[in-house]
Length: 343
Image (cartoon, rainbow, N blue to C red; front, side, top):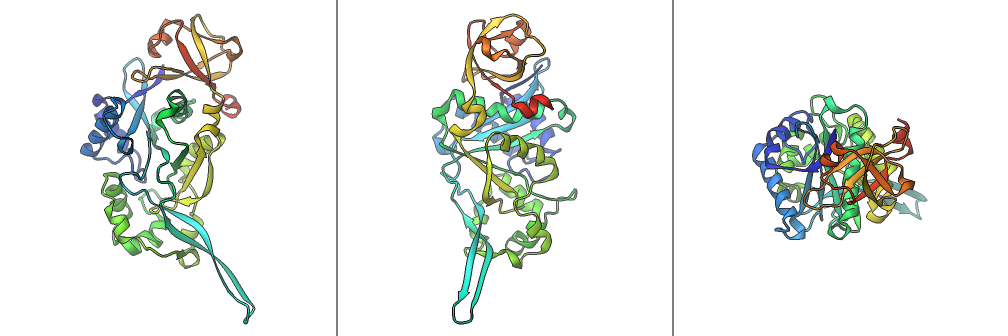
């Protein structure tokens, strides 16, 4: 049985193995032991309320309840940019006009932005390719919304998610080649690694302070602005089905889109219900739902069939153990969504 749970110190070897499978471009999951170890410790301290809000971040893993081995990872940053600047490009327009010459030109531009400072961020979503069957990806991504719904006061009003941009199998990014390489004088993989390991000061020091005209970029770079890596397309579709939208902000490294939504407008948060755990066996034809306990320290999420209208969640002993709950406890439940249930 696949279950979402908080990260543990013993997960480090598995997270390193996952990082080695990303192929680059996932800055928050670098293949660096010390960085990942520090990330785990920061998550544990967040759960212990030992950090100020500006430093808080939760890390969850997807594990098989039979052996507890982590095969996927997802995370939430509580409030980005309050400690270290959080940069992206805003895609905008600059108008040049001359009444005398009867000339009017509207030119698309890229401007360095900190507009999402103070937002909560969905990040570090990665699932082992060997486990990308069934609905594991939906469970991994959407489980965070039930945690946010349970503990709404711990998160900000606005939620963002940076999507991995377009790069090839060798790790070359056409957007980076046309933009970042001009200012940073390093390979995309190196900049990606530095950012992922927390060395971000160079971004502010070296990025242009004035708008960049998009027409000056290569054709290949222009075409990938706001586009996602093919392997990230399913993750984007999941978030868009929850209400997230691309509002013309992109990653400064690879041009991938930043999706955003008000937290209370996210479908899984807005439509989730608190039901009661009861002993029994669910009917296979019932809608598949995300089911989470309401325990902050021992948070668990699984996918189970639920007759939502009944007001209860029928679970057997194995499922009860996996969810770390007792019969009679409250469970937060939301349907996967029509599209996912029919997939």
